[in-house]
Image (cartoon, rainbow, N blue to C red; front, side):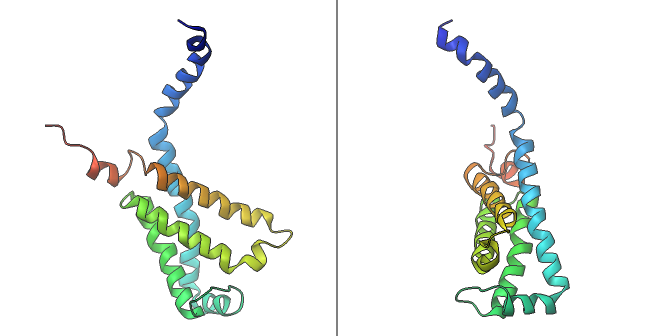
Length: 154
């Protein structure tokens, strides 16, 4: 065994052990980020008058009218996380939710980028990072995507 092999042996052991956790980590990541947006979408849906007020007075969505932005944002916060929760069309769900997250930061930048709101912005960065992970590596083996796309042994 070479010196390099001996140096890298602990890393290889750790990689082997941690690789077995990947499906669970991907599932937890999907569920965690989905829960954040499902809660927000559900609140918007159940307090529609407040949602319209916020989109008219607080959020500054470019291009879209406040009413269209409220509907689009609420639908995005309910539809895309659902795809991630069940692990179906997960990369599309992650891309869509990344866009919703980015639009939230852009629309509420006057608050999120203000001094004293670093933690709120950090949450959006965390969610965006998790979504980039899911876009790049997929939903893992504990998903319908994996079930439907795995090679058939014959």
